Length: 313
Image (cartoon, rainbow, N blue to C red; front, side, top):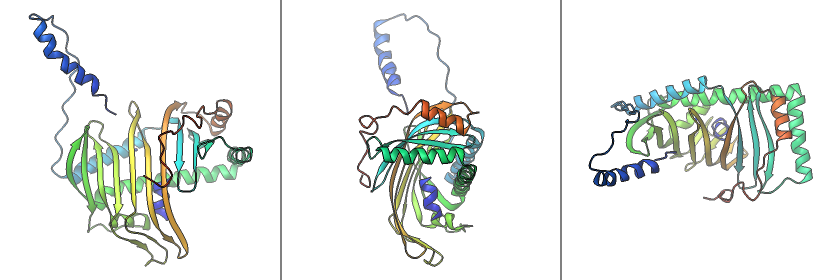
């Protein structure tokens, strides 16, 4: 299912401010003639929100897509994935030729010699097989284009309304726009999706989306596939470095079937952590050498002590 493939494959430090504000009355009462100090830079006032919530979302998504197109930086990070059957952790490095990832943990523990050999063979094939590398690059490009298309369609596919503000983020509730005609199968899932969206007010970036299928979705009159009512997904995006935002958490819980007989049972959780920037000119081969020379120091003891049991909340 196209929409499932897309879903699987964009922090506030207020404590110091509270402490400083709490100290001001005390300092004034103890010092009748305080010494003047230079005021810090005044943060510009945020513009008022548009009356039309859809317009606010449209502006935010246009900014989101522009920032994604502008930001060509590459990063190394720790990737954790778990489902009902297993979990694994990978050390991932991005390059202009695609991503390369070395598996460091399997089901929370070190890889067996057999699994390590299979993982090495997978990496060797990616690096040294031109055909495999071309498929890898093509797949990543298609995934990015599909994500871009789906994100661009959001302001037209849904009706938004303001639902409050929290932690510097504007919360909006959304439901399907009955006038929206999906141009393809992936986007047709929008007609059965509702939920909430959070936008970081200062950065004008998408921060969080929480959605659920309120009715069954069928493709090709149910012959090509079906997604069952009640499926949910949750995506969290954060600023992991100044000006650089990444999806850091994703959860998908959906069931259904595809092409008549193939059952869909997606209960998956992903977390991305420990972001470090790498040279933008890094090649796939150089990234592979980095993984071999500097393997991730993640251990079974310290990697995901807070992780939940796969498939459970």
